[in-house]
Amino acid sequence: MKVIYGLKYDEDLVLGEEENALVYSLIKDGEEHDLFTEVINKYEKRYSQQIKFALLRLKRMVNKRGIQLDEFENESEDGTLPIYKLNQTGKLRLYFIVVDQITIICGGGEEKLVVKWQDDPKLRKIVERLKKIIIEIDENDIKITKENFSRIFFEIDE
Image (cartoon, rainbow, N blue to C red):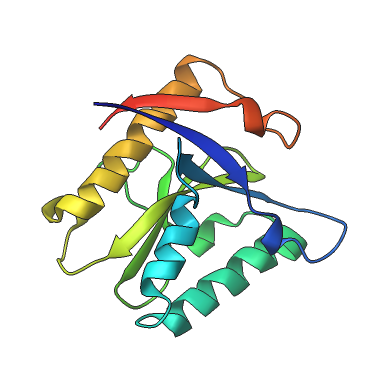
């Protein structure tokens, strides 16, 4: 089944005038909430501290440090694809594509109840979705900016 995803710019993470990183989230065509917001809404009670810490780290990247790969852990099988999870303890996993030195895309997240994400159908679906989006970005030489993000769509099989 083909599914279309667009990008939502996460302006809530911007505290000042200068942005050192741009954070986008995937939003499924026809849905009200982007995937990042869905994860926060779904797990805000169970993992409130982990979500708060993740938001603080993302705000720090946007407003001060820029994207720091030491804040992330590569989750691709062989380490060659830019699929990352935010480094943090706990069972909630937030997955990102690091597009370039200033741009990341949140691809969703889920509770991790197994040792390897490959063993969990929900986590595997998220990572597989991000792989397909990376391929589209690479094959079509897509450059994501604040000026064009609303016109970028990814049509992938899920």
